[in-house]
Length: 354
Ligand SMILES: *Cc1c(COP(=O)(O)O)cnc(C)c1O
Image 1: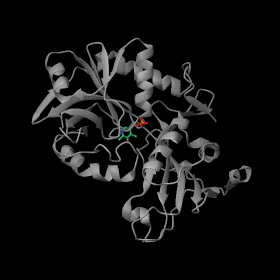
Image 2: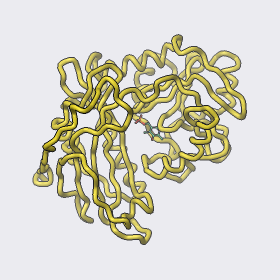
Image 3: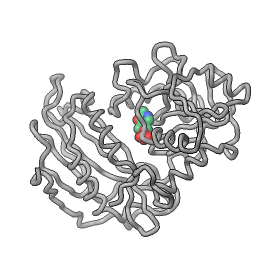
Image 4: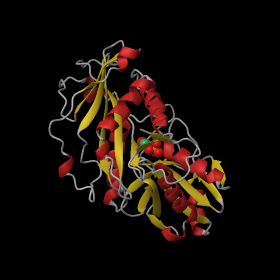
C-alpha cells in the first residue's frame, strides 16, 4: 500500500494569495492555490497528486453530469495562536463521505488517501487558512463519476478531489425560516442521509419560493405527513423547550451532522436534558405560543450555529425570543469556536493538528 501514497506535487508558479482581501472574504468564491486529486480506474484509487487549482477537462457525456453520481463533504480548518493549522473532526467527515458513496454506488476511499491528501494539501496551502475571528478555511472533498457513457449504470471510473476556500461568516444575521408543508427533501428509503449532489438540486425550487416570500431557509418536514420537523437547508435543527434540548433523531431522511453531534455532546456535558426524538410542528408552535420555547437554531459546518429569529408556518409568522438571552446556543457557539481554534481543552479529540 505504501506506493499508493506517493503524492505527486506540482506547485503553482503564480500564487493568487496576494489578491485576497482576508478582512473581507465572500463565502465560497475564492479558492486556494492547490487541489488534491485521485482517480479511480475501475479497480483502485491511483494517481494521487496535488496540482494548481484549475479547470477540469470533462467529456460532455460525463455520467455525473447526467445522472448525478456525485457526493461531497464540508469541513473547516482554523489557526491557533501559534499559527498552527487545526482541522475540526476530519475523520468524521471521512467516514460520512464513504457512507454517502456507498449509497450512490460510488467506490469508497481508503482513509490514508483521504487523510494524506488532506494534510499534504493543507501543508502546501497553509497560508490560506485565515486567522481573524469568524473566518476559516472551508474544505470541500468530493467524489464524482467520470465514465464517458450515457447508459444508466454505476460509472466504472471516478475522481476524488479536495479543494479549499477561505471563508467568513455564512449567515450575517439570525435566520427566518419557513416550515415546508408541500415539498419534501427526503423520503424513507431515499437518499436524504447521503451528502449526494442531487439532494441539493431538488431542494432549490422550494427554497427559492421561500426566499421570494422573505425567508432565508426552509425547515423540512417528513414527506409522509408534513407534521414532524426534519432539518433545514444544510443544517440540522434543535429546539430548547423548557430545559430540554430536542432534535429529530438520525434516520435515512436526515443527514447525520457532525456539528449536531458536537452540540449534543457539549449540551450533555453541561447537564442539559437531551431528547433525540420526533418533534412535531404543533409542539414547536405551541411552545412558542406558551413561552416555553427558549431557543431554536440550526447546526452545520458552514454556520456552526444559526440562530432562528422567526418561524413561518401556514401563512403565520412566529417571532422567537431575542438572540442575546439565548444561553445554550451562544455558549455552544463560543465553546466550539474556542475548541476549534485551540483556545479550549479538546476533551473529545476533535481537533486534528497538521
Ligand atoms: C452538511 C449537512 C448538514 C450539516 O452537517 P455538518 O456535518 O454539521 O456540517 C445538515 N444537513 C444537511 C442536509 C447537510 O447537507
